Image (cartoon, rainbow over all chains, first blue to last red; front, side, top):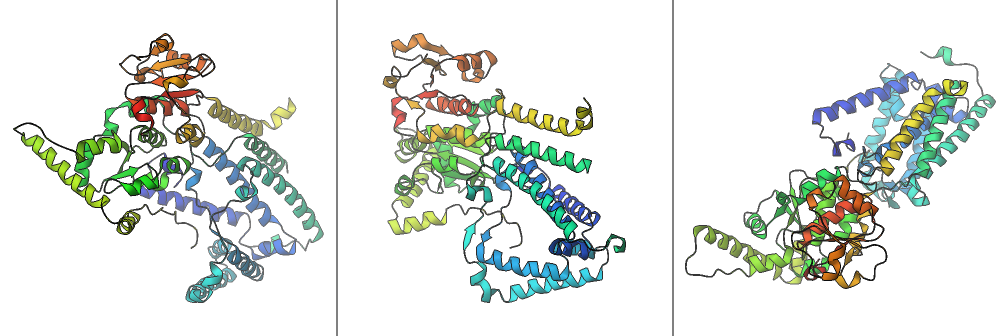
Length: 201
Length: 203
Length: 141
């Protein structure tokens, strides 16, 4: 509740409770959207199921629009929202590794955990693999430190590097999303596979 | 299908509104104007140089002096314990990194009065009620604390305490400002604010 | 009509948000959006005037005396209004300041008062507001 607590003093336990509730809500949303199924997730790569794109992008856009309005109305201090530090080399390398893992395993970290919570064995293996990867990363960090911290750009925001106002950028994002969803849906028709939802647990 | 279209239309409309707004990363005042005005016109927001001298002598850790002058003026002469945040930087950067500790009272000062007064209103307007000024600034500090002299034959107990505090503060002041440049720079650098980076994400 | 009925939720959310945005943008009783923008003249020093700079300004000049001491210069007495800083934000006083078609110059024998009042007024979106410097303080910011 960081950004809101500049205006209201929240006791610590309330912050923790809110985090817990939001996390639970997120897991619930993932599960009911069907993201506990690795087939649905891998479908994003093979083209027959683009639900992932639509759900996550819509969530991002709603958050974008909502937070901009809250900031304008003075209820949210956007300067306190964490912006990821951008390391160019690490982003590209990590993206490739993560993408390969996603397709092979059919999960990403968040959905892996939500699938784990409903008892899927492949999710258990996936999460164990994730932890192993993190362990290896930490142990070999001195060796890869150079690459991991190369090309540091700081906490950049896309609209700033493009020189656009946040509002205009939001509009462009929404328009781009509409186009992308259209393309995704025609791709679904093109790469369709036999109906799998009946097999889903 | 229907819901999807309506929802998309709503998002599109809202982003049109956003595109028209002059959004900026800067914050706005959260206090109401009349409340802020009466707050800043109250004498509680001002500390006298004697009160500040006492804070320094007692090494009170609940106060933080903020010197709003340029770095050059700060290096030449400053009050012990102060950090340098030029007024221009205070306004043009989110001051949360400097002012957000609610347990510390921040006392602004400059050569005269004007910049600390601006900073006081600005900080309090953004919601930092822990903001104050030192009335008179460096000019008053030098006149009252450093060049303090008591006239007359007899001195009351209270005047004596005041004199002692001023004398001790003056000593600390002279000690700091007479350090050779290299030592002084190092000392002042060590007192600099370490900008608190918000920790988050998977680092 | 049918269109409205079918899409009432979308339309009402949109209208609600637009209303809130309009109120926030144009509200006169509150501070304006973007505090840095309205504080900028103070960082540049462009909001401070000396007595000899006043005649050069265009428009109806209005001097506001926030202090107890009357201004010494006779030629300014006619355009001076004595207002107690505590009651500066009362409707009638604020209207006078807003309606003035020209520069409004704040004056007080204690420069602190005019500086603080300036910041409050500027952040409320009032442009063309200046501080009359007491000569001792203009170089000693």
